[in-house]
Image (cartoon, rainbow, N blue to C red; front, side, top):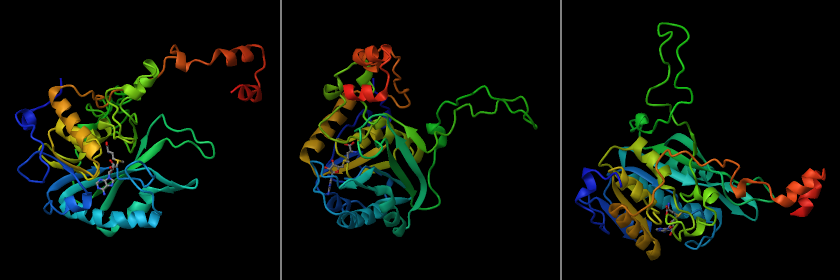
Length: 332
Ligand SMILES: C[S@@+](CC[C@H](N)C(=O)[O-])C[C@H]1O[C@@H](n2cnc3c(N)ncnc32)[C@H](O)[C@@H]1O
């Protein structure tokens, strides 16, 4: 069962235009146009993964200068709608052109800074799976740059503490000598987060072949894991606050907000993604949406799964002492 509480129990109305009296807004259209309809200083958290300009189905690849100048007016609008004690989390990876890597967080930083925002963390989101590169090391992280609008911002650390590695540790000197030294609620999760990139990734090992038809997977090529957004929401907002995703895709940030009793607003220019987002929200309320529980440990192969074992052909060669790496590579 979903953990719905009072805010959404009776009301699952999804509106298409912003109104502070509503709770869930899902808008189909261009984000810059839509943002202009939101009043100043109402949003507590903006969290988004903007288009990376990689030539995905929903975007046309342009040069990096052009791409960033298109983003500048959007960012100015985002800062306008953000409350004074609000935060903005911008999740980005790399723009790649002819094999050259442009880390987008570095390019975005001066744009946010020009708007007066203050960087609080550059969070590394590390994940285990992805494309295997052949001319550079395979990319296994993206970053979330978290800015606040002012020096008085919300940070609810206790909401997102994770279990301490050694909870039994004790002070070994001073007045507290002999007393437990850890926080009973757990430790700060740090600025390196390991969250499965896609909610269905965890199934790859124990239920082979389920990846492409796992119910959590939609047709969107780069969906947010709901769990990743939840950590930002829990740490940076309070119940009833507004959370905005200006490039909401299939609505992962909206679901994370609803699940945690925050009001939520999302916009995307693709009709199909908005339709999927709406369905996912409805499925959430009916209890039919599968969500990876926040903080659930990542599956570690035991070695007994077929996919985690060395192929028999390789094993045979090694047992015959043909153990040179060259021989193994020739076999591939
Ligand atoms: C990286 S994806 C975001 C995915 C989202 N985090 C999710 O969980 O589904 C970026 C999204 O931005 C949308 N988009 C690109 N340009 C847009 C624009 N000008 N206005 C509104 N949406 C836009 C794309 O359709 C795409 O769904």
